[in-house]
Amino acid sequence: MTARPLYQVIRNAIEGRIMSGELRPGDRIPFEHELMAEYDCSRMTVNKAISALASAGLISRQRRRGSFVTQPRIHMAALQIPDIREEIEKRGHIYGLRLAARSVRDAADEDSAMLRLPSQGELLALRCVHLADARPYAVEARLINLAAVPEAREVDFAETPPGSWLLAHVPWTEAEHRITASVPGDAAALLGLAGDEPCLVLERWTWRDKEPITYVRTVFDGERFDLTAHFAAQRFGG
Image 1: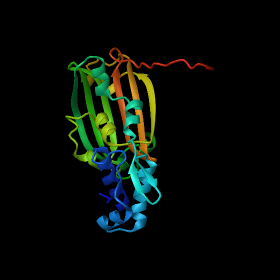
Image 2 (image 1 turned 90 degrees about the horizontal axis):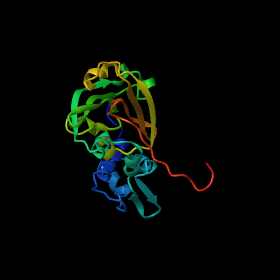
Image 3 (image 1 turned 45 degrees about the horizontal axis):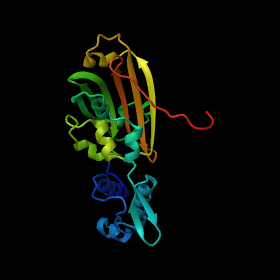
Image 4 (image 1 turned 90 degrees about the vertical axis):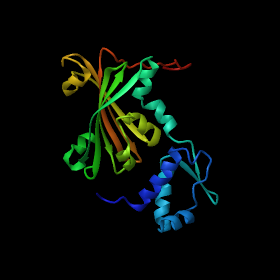
C-alpha cells in the first residue's frame, strides 16, 4: 500500500479533530512552527496541509494571528445530500441496516473513468440494504477512496450507514447526482422484488478539492420511495 504524503497525514489529523468536535469553530489550530516540530517536517509541507484545509472551508487563515476553525462544511452537506436513515425516520418508520458485502478492491480493477475515482490505490467496496420497518427500502453499492478517507477502513458499516458516517466525518466541496428510472437488476433479490418492477436509481459522486471521496449507486423500490422538493415563489421574476 502506498504511503500517504506527509502533508496529507497532517491535514487528515487536523481535519479529524475538527470533525470530531475536539476543535470547534473559533478555535485556533496549532501554529505552523508547532506542526513543524510535531511532524519533523518543513514549513512548505505544513503550509500545503493548511492551505488544503483552508480550501476545503474548514479553517480561515488570519495574518499574524494563525489559522482558526470555521463552521464545518458538513452543516451544508446535511442539507444538500440526503441521509437515508434520516429520511426513513422522518417518514415515521424504524430504520434498519444490513451489510450484504464488504471488500477492499484495487482501483485499477474498476472502471475509473465511469466512476470518476482514482485509477490507482485502494477502494472500500460496500453493499448495504437499508430497511424501513424491517422491509427492504433501498440497496446501496458504494466505493470509498481510501486514499482520501483512510479511516473508513476501520468503521463497522454493519452498524453505521456509510452515507451517514461520511456526512458526519468527511467534508466535501463538490457533488453530482444522477437520477434514472430502471428495473432493479441484481438488486431485485435484496429488495424482495420479482425483477421487473419500476425502481428509482440515484447515483452520486462527491469530491473534496478535486480529490474523489466516494461513488454510490442506490436503487430504491419505486413503490415505496419518492423524491419531493418544496419551493417558495420569488417576489419578482421567474
